[in-house]
Each structure stands twice: as structure tokens, then as C-alpha cells.
Image (tube, rainbow over all chains, first blue to last red; front, side, top):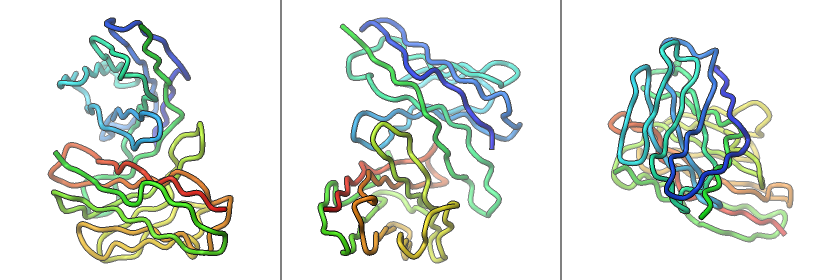
Length: 115
Length: 115
């Protein structure tokens, strides 16, 4: 399984963009990059995912480098409610018949948004 | 969007008793569900993968006789912690995958305290 490396913590001022990096240098060609976040004592929340192209949705943007060895999650205008642990995960290709493989979580980045 | 309901959210039980946690997909059929546990200030650890109508696949080091998983229908998976002990106290989270969604949806988690 491809492993991911994230900084343990980051700070961001409210209203500014939060850029969370992730290294996944051993990612294989058919593995996707997923981002989730977990607010204290809640289940993880899906943010965004991508394979090779940059992606954007109502929550965030995902920038994947051309060699796919790293990516950056961008929260364009961080709010206090964005304070959470952010996980960058590479999906394990499933060997069975279903379309989705298991997700393995690393330690994530604790993002603290301050006023 | 896809919703996963997990119950109970909190449970306190005595040592030696068993506790059942339910995970339901409310608006989609979940052919595969995942069970995680999380200790304070730690990341999520995958315990097992359950596939509807077949036996669960447990991760290395997880006792299958202690953590019984049943996935009898496409919308319900249960995790039973048998003969619970204080060291089983943890945050348990389920997740479901569906070919029609963009990723994985997580339940809100169950805080188990064994006294």
C-alpha cells in the first residue's frame, strides 16, 4: 500500500487559504488520493478525491502534482469550523469483485484555524 | 448524499458483558462496510472489512472471536464486542462504500466505555 506523509500540525488565520500538503511518493498508477477530515469525537467527513487531474468542489480544491507523488488540499477561505484533523489517504486497489478497497489512515494533520 | 447511521453514539457497559453497535446505510446499499477503532489522540485503525452475505475479513491482530461482525443485509452491519474489558474502551467507527457514491461515508462513531 502506498504510504502518505503529512505534517503533524498547521495553523491558519480565519479567512485565509489553508494549504495542506501530502506526500505519497510510492503511489501506484491506479490508486486515488482521498482527503477526509475529522472533527473531534465525530466520524471522518469526505472532502475530495482525485486520480491525476486537479479537482474542485464546494468544500476544497485538490492539486496533484504531475508525477502524482504529492498533493495539496486547499481550503480557500478557512473558518473556525474547519479546525480538524485532515487525513490524506491513498486508496488500496481492491483485489475482490467490488469497486472500492479499504482506506488506511495515517496520522493526519491537525489544522487549527485561529481568529 | 449518502448517509450512514451508527448507534448507539455512547455506551457504558460492565466488564464481561457484550455490546452491539449497529451501522446502517440509510439511502444506499452498502455491499462493503468497514469497522475502525480509534484511541484518544490516535488515528483510525481498521479492524475488519465486512461484505454482505459473507464472512468478515479481519486485520492482523484483531480477534475475530472477540469482535463479531455481521453484515446480513445490504443496509446493516453490526459489530459485537464480546466479553468486554476496560481495554476495549475506545471510539468505534463504521464506514460504508457504494459504487454509486464518490467515496466512503462514515458513521458518527460510538464511544464505548467498559467499567
